[in-house]
Image (cartoon, rainbow, N blue to C red; front, side):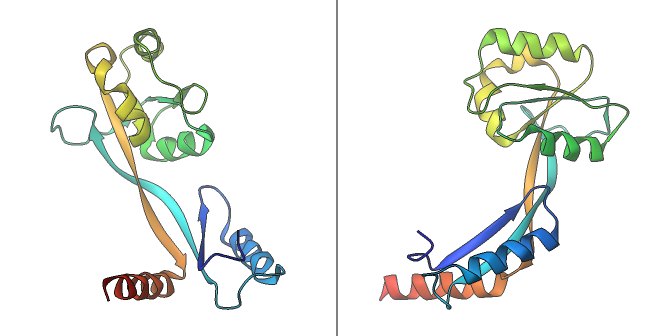
Length: 165
């Protein structure tokens, strides 16, 4: 697949910049990989908090409970903990879970009076249970480019230009 690729974006949630550079070297040295392959690396960082419903302003998170059904919940837990005061708990379900009313009740029970924090992905699956869940905040993600942003933009521009011609 890398032999057919025009670009590779390495995405970091918890890996170091040095690890990303080493992986870039491994990709570069692979047999069959084009020497013109555009390589880039991005780091996912916590984005803004928004309420699951309504237009409330973000609050200071105190002792939140992270509720999630993603593959790597510990990275999310670390991100939420970095934004909150006190302890941060987690209720992690298997990846891609379709949440049920029972799950929502369990989440609120475990949270007690604490706020719940979810990902954007999980928010779309939990919106129907917002009245059961109470106070829920959705943590967005943002990308910070380590390297390759300009090269990637150039590649995308050339693809768009050739398709519109």
